[in-house]
Image 1 (tube, rainbow, N blue to C red):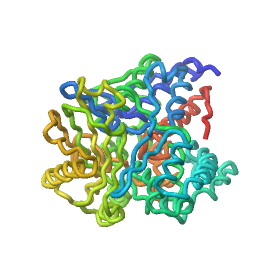
Image 2: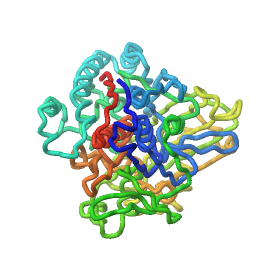
Image 3: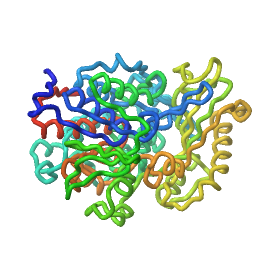
Length: 514
């Protein structure tokens, strides 16, 4: 199917302004520009990506946000629907093993091929490997039924929710179970269940609190694989920005937006920090949702998402992160997940008691074993992440920063055998929850945005066609369908399609395999 030319919009090309150059913003720019719409994207920083951005220091390159690319088909679809090929802009590598999980007493490797993972299960958890077939079969059914719900907008929530097309999804919501409880139905051993349920951390939630339907996240990995992009996942928004510019989008870097321009309850453009007024037919907000509501909307204009409402909403956890350039290489996998010795206590401290831990869980990306472009020859770019409470905890991160650094160094030595790490560091950058808030405009430092609890999902989440204002749309982790790269790409597709429909455009639609 062809994309439209500008005349299809009726009366010439329409204009859309996008606030923020994160993955949702650039994906929207790519789709809309390919359909003949005049697109202007304004980004505060000198680079695209938002929290999917990068740091480059002395020959080292570090992703600052996502490092797992799952459901690559959803990324590919954005390019395909825009008349492009992702392979022309990005160099992908499918990982095998996908990742390694470390408990105090055993190491589990999740492989790209199901039979290899089953053999690993049988080695460590005898008699349990056959349950993986049941897991994959049932979670595929769940994903197939829920995928239409993730791809629909809820701008008219009751009409959408009551649509017969969504009825098959209802039994698969697992409304009364958590991810961990759901996984225990497959795997009787707690550790094995955790190997398939830690993915709730992608949503910034505990496996004991995250809605049971998200057990399908692990299915998505095992069925569709995990990818790395050469140069890091921060290359994805760069590539989308380039593809969008190739199709006529105007990308304005270092041009921060001060606030939305309103005419009554209608958004008519934006005011930039330098005083310039830019007008458009539609405006997309890709800024962090909490930040946008508290900083980008004129005082007194909000009716629903007021300051008291925002303070009462539930937000994800945050992260303490270290980006290290080291003068050696380590014989460790691309991805390692290390569970605290008392993992349940660690999770409760973060998500229930809102306090720091001494016994930490952490993640290490040792991507230089796969991608030599990330560091000078013979050296490594390391990414270390520790889940922490967000800024609601009241933790003084200037004080806690040094203690967490020491905990990470000790844990790397004890749990990963990196006993000489400290002496090989030549570049070091640390992100705390306060860094996320101050430097990247993330509300409460909640790295994974709004929580995905049942009261903040589907039509109960801020809607793609924003309910507060006419001609205003949301993309990113703070709107439907949620945080994480695959769902952010879907938010861009939903909002772009809504805008295109409002302009009367015809455009290509590509289905993906569940």
